[in-house]
Every structure is written in structure tokens, then in C-alpha cells.
View 1: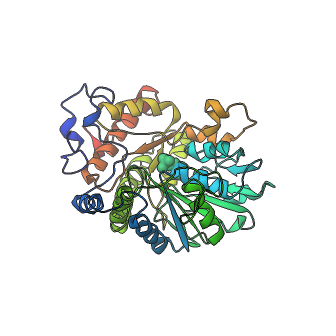
View 2 (view 1 turned 120 degrees about the horizontal axis):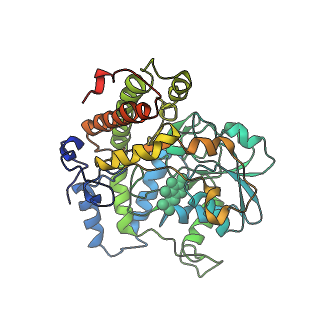
View 3 (view 1 turned 45 degrees about the horizontal axis):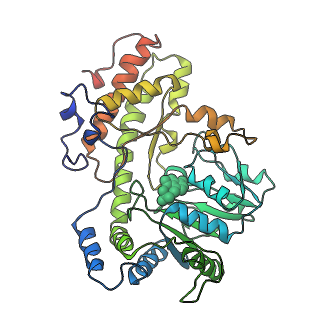
Length: 413
Ligand SMILES: Cc1ncc(COP(=O)(O)O)c(C=O)c1O
């Protein structure tokens, strides 16, 4: 399989194949996200394979220590996925029969795990800038339990809801730093949950983690992870097999050594996108009608330079009527994109609730996640920006008679 993630000459090299499309030649797509695994990871994994323990051994504790050392929480408990970690955190919080506040713009797992434990999600609308539910908006509601999501890796300031029982969904935000320090230090929360799915900032293949400063929570999490057993006891309560294997943990230990580098690479690529999209593209065209100029001025706001952003995703906003055509245009040129996310309450198993988040409804129609991962070549970022420009400026705005005049020489063909 051609490795488009490294050493690629850029998507220009794919242009000759005009029939390229996501469905037909997926192996040639620049994916929207991709893990970076190198020989050091392989060596770390190999070393475990020859040891006595493939699971239940010392690598899991080593990985947990790496996470507590990095985030600054007292305890960390590893799980077989972020979803398992969420489930265990919600059980630990005794969420059953509670109505729990969260955002509608998140991966379905945030809310699914509430259903697993017999809780009811209540979705609170997002704000257009951060694409998150603002902590002050959670405060408007009486509910005691809140699961804020650090969407795309942007850290939320949770101080305004300090008095609530907070479980942070930080699946996007390993490495993010907010006003209260590193996300995961649980400065204002009971627990913080991470995912190590391959699209995330580091990966263990599948994997998750809960951090906490409570010894009691830690013990309960360990019990839930291993069939209600704690340090060799027989089952004390109903639990699950949510263990992370030592093989996966070894990959996590090795990936943690590269985390600072990954964050720096993500940040630099995001800046490149911002420079090209923000300054040269979205705000440069004086002949765009006033309403579109206004609209586009906010285009890259979710990803504005933001100190402490983990840049799990690079999300931009485009005119809603142009979105599908733009995604198709990019796919034909070998550029994979994604939508993060269809609103959770529009999914079939949530649709009967009394949900209403008008800002999220409007905003989600405009969102596209562009390729972003540590080894994404810079020239691919440039090509993605160029193709967006060519489609939106040259085709879509022109066809919809939104603009007149010659295309800018910036990206002329
Ligand atoms: C916001 C959010 N929460 C939870 C999860 C679930 O994590 P996992 O896929 O590791 O189960 C994800 C993963 O995509 C996520 O993005």
C-alpha cells in the first residue's frame, strides 16, 4: 500500500488519475487522519511479546504512570477503548437515572455510554466559535452531572461549572493545556477520559484511559475493568473485561515518548492551514457579497491560534450548500475529509427525545475536517488549500453567481 503519509510528492502527483475517487481507490486517498508508528514502537511491542505477560503485566502500569506523569493527575486506569473508559467512568459516577448535560456535537460514544448505564443525555447547544457547549451554558441548567467535550482538542475552561460532578470527555485532547493546566489533571473534574484510537493524538490501536485524583474512583475503575476484581480478589461487584493488553500498552508507552513532537507537528500544520485559508483565501475577496464575506470571516475560527490546543482535528466551515460538492471535489483529487459529527440526537436511537440545539443544527451543516496528522507533508496542506480555493472560488461561487470577476492569481491554474 502506498504510504501517502510520508514522503508523498503531494496530491498533485495524483491529479493525472481523474477518476480517482474515495470509493474506487481508497488506498490512494490522503486520509483525514492517520497514526504515526515507527520502528521504536515496533521494538517496544516486540519486547513485550517475548515476556511472561501479554496482559495483566507491568506495561499497563508503565503506560498509566506515563499518563499521570504527563497530565498531573494522581491516578490513571487504562481501558481497552475510550468507550469502555467512558462506560466505567459513568458507572463509577453512579449516573443511573440521572439526566446528564453534554454537547450534541460529539462522537456518539459520549452519549451511548450514558444509555449503557441508564442515564439520559440532555444536549446543551454549542457556540459557533469554539464548536463546544460553553461551560456557562451548562450552568444555566440545574443538572448536577456534566460531561463536557474538548472538541477537536481545544481545551475548555471548566471553572464556571466547578460545583457540578464533571467527567471530561477528553478523547480529542491529550496534550491540551487550559487555564487550569494540562487537560487530564482533573483540576475541576472527578474524572477525565481519553481515547487512543488511531485517529487520536497518540494511539494504542484501540485503548482508553481514565485519570482521577480520587483513590476511591481509581479502585472502582479497576474493579469495573476486571470483572469486579481488585488486586487478586474474587469478584466484588458486576464488572467487565475492559482490560488493555500489555501489547497495546507497550505501543502507548512508546507513543507517549513522541507526544510532544506530535503536538508540535499538528500545531505547525494547523498554522499552515490557517495562514493559507484564513489570510489568503477566506478573507481576501472584496467582491464577495457582504453576507458571504461576513459568513466566511468566521470560517476558521474553530481552529484559530489557541494556546494549548491539541489539534486532534482541523475543522473548517464552508457555505453549507457547497459542502458536499467540495468534499466530492477533494475526494476526486485523492483528499479524504470527514464530518465531525452528525448531531448525536439526530441518530436513530436518540431521535425521540426532546432535543433542540439550533446553533448546532445550523453549524454542523458547514463543517468539514481536513487532513491533519503528524507526518502529513506540508505540500499536501498547500494542495488541499489550493483545491478548496479552486472549487469554492472558481466553481461554486461562480456557478451560484455569488461572484463575478477574474479568479485571483494566487491559485490560478
Ligand atoms: C469525543 C469522543 N468520545 C469518545 C470516543 C470513543 O473512543 P473509542 O473510539 O476509543 O472507543 C471518541 C472516539 O472517537 C471520541 O471522539
